[in-house]
Length: 311
Image (cartoon, rainbow, N blue to C red):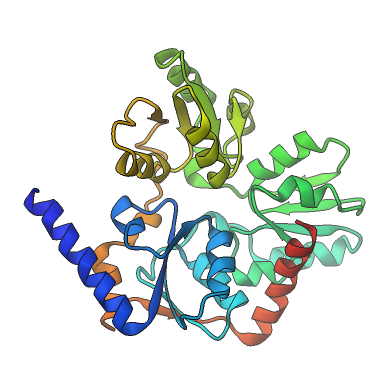
């Protein structure tokens, strides 16, 4: 074992010891590096982490992800203390649409329904009628009878929902995931030319011209399930942490799980969480205890409760 790998193992063992002593639970988003997901108690998509965590007995939560994910845990489980090991880890898309802009829109369009992708701040959720995940968006929007639906913040996910539900009047604004939106149709065509035997699975946060070339479009969890079941190699069009995870878990899987533009499908905010920042948080030397004002929490929770009823 190399000195670097040995150092990683030592830090992971220290984290396991500390979290046991502190009675803490560690959550890690799928886009985290393998060394982080290996020490997590729960690994998954943003909403899956929050919903599963709410049912756990531990009162201290270490969220290895970005700020809106820590907020989501606080919204669903206000009694828990939620720490973000990397306080500067934010989601650009979650903050692209201001709550004030949505409030003004609602005043001008009282008959519209505001749908928010779960990847939003607590303040934005509080201004919306219902949240959706990438896997539940179509199902939930299909049930909305309003003459107009404002879908925020991700214009690409909204465009995907519009394509599946052409009879719905969906208004899209200018939000997007900088990572997924950076992939082009030319990137897909180049990957297919290089791997003609492979199929392509992409996230609906990608541009419409990209999803149009894919064999499968789905959430991160759905992409993982699809890739695991595929008998063909799969070019994976979502944050590179998914492929990193496959390659770290499954020996000899090189060649089946293929990166799509790994240098661009790389979320720098997700990767701000390291073993060192987790250790510092558990030792009380770093991280941030994330709070959500109670009045804001109650308002934001209404949109999540609506999602659970409809989705």
